[in-house]
Image 1 (cartoon, rainbow over the protein chains, first blue to last red):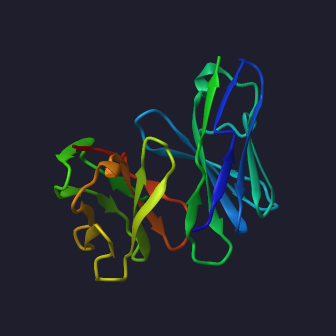
Image 2 (tube, rainbow over the protein chains, first blue to last red):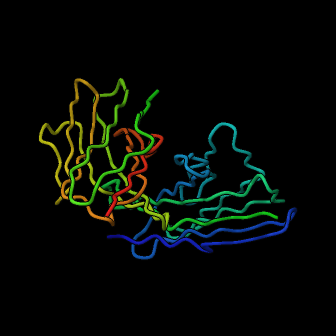
Length: 116
Length: 114
């Protein structure tokens, strides 16, 4: 199946710094990518939907200035957590929809962010 | 609005037994997909099985099968001959034809005991 690579898998940063997480579709073009946040022992919470070449659509309650999403190409979307605080510590997952029209969604391995 | 409900927070069975995970959903739409995803300790989300709402036949993938009851809006997952590697969180999800967002259930933690 199609592969989505997410990097880094784990990152630890100091409070106040910014962290960038990359999501790449390795063998297909992804017109749409989704970013999720997952708290321990909970389900996935959709943060935003990004379409290539346009601004991301954020879910209610998600601060767009804090969680910057860029989808500059058909194979790369990035999530930047700006001025990170300990409450931003979480597991972040991306998924990508193939351009071929099947609508299949493929998931990255996830990124564990710890803010000290 | 769409909702997905998984009423079993945790289940455990002995290896080789059969286990059924429950999922109910609500939508006013007629065209949608239903999914079961597995999230093992590695946290990688893996698609287990997919069902298209217009298909009456229940989807099957090897040891995994579903019981799709459209009128009752029920979509349970049956795992036969369970294996230790089946230990994971299992999420039921709904997606409308009209968009690509997944509506997720809360998940069921499944533990397969040796």
